[in-house]
Image 1 (spheres, rainbow, N blue to C red):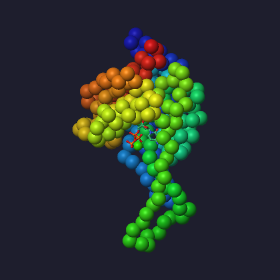
Image 2: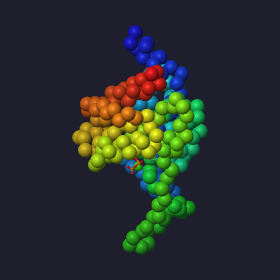
Image 3: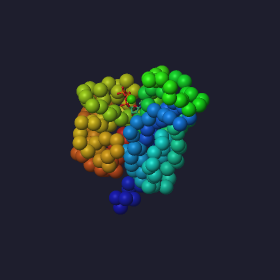
Length: 225
Ligand code: CTP
Ligand code: CA
């Protein structure tokens, strides 16, 4: 009975999830990336699908595969491509959960050919990428739910609250890199959820699948009232 009920918690709600890293091309063979595995985002997408949602999973390069069937997966490479895909689906989405580790900077010029080694040093000029989450937050419609992540090493809660407010989020999931057992390649995570009223909930260290349940239940709560 519990499983039956679970399947209806988010029935027919379209939800966007972003996952994984982005790769920013330097030349045809090199890129700037990061250590995001995509595990957290894929676990969230699976959990939302198990709750009946129509999930659009927009993911950077990753080895992850979805366990659930009813997930529409869109593979992207760069931050700019991820932005495009998010904007395409945002209007019709009830909620967005943005767990991707999006590059903050991207090369100004992408070399058409492989850069050869010549000098003793090489400078690559970078420009900032568009903040996808803030863009969505600036255009949030009534009733839309926006969830962000914050990965911090210091002043964790203060930094997370600043992001929550600046990006117009409904809640933010704070990951601290200071917690052993939390982080990019791990199968476990320890989170604190902070919502718009600055209500703070700290969870135990658990598997990313269990963490996904906590996050998705909070989303269902906000959607269903
Ligand atoms: N994010 C995004 N687009 C970007 C950068 C970040 O959508 N170009 C989203 C992430 O998916 C995450 C949230 O914003 O949900 C916070 O990302 P984080 O890197 O912690 O924060 P930034 O705002 O980029 O600030 P900083 O890296 O300086 O801490
Ligand atoms: Ca960032």
